[in-house]
Image (spheres, rainbow, N blue to C red):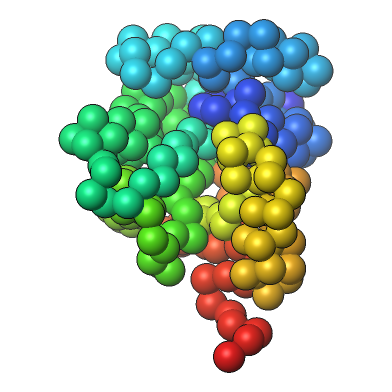
Length: 244
């Protein structure tokens, strides 16, 4: 094993795919997630450690770090936790905005704070990978709350990449709609899924396996000269238009 990677959201579609990709690279994933049954199943598949809990619980971050590192080093951290809360701005409450910010941005910051001592002990450079969304750069209706929260994640990425260099690298992936359990309300309707897929130049929705290899690369030593980047994995939606 070349080191332990702490993966928040490790039982989710993208988090589990990243864990598999890292295991194939020789890393030991330590999974953190809410659904204990799903979490245990993925951990058993990968012979990985796991910590069950919710990022709303402040104690989780210290507990997960201690369980993953056992007081030693962490090679990296992936925060693949998110929300999909799509409402017109007039219908968004303070609670909506605060929940999206807490889960997406504040949770990422707390996870990193708790893991910093262990990440600083890593051989070479430790890697951190966070997650944004194509909606930050593009601007989509009914995305005000989640885009605001994920915009904060992009700001956090750049600030910490500067602050934690040269010992720790921080990068961010901004996907478009990906077929995961979290997105089932959108992807589970065949007509809706096709309509959204057709908005992408590559004419399909994302799969967790489209994102996992890049995340695994960015957190690994193979990306030792990559930091402070926001990288779109979005079927071309953020930059291309194939129809007038």
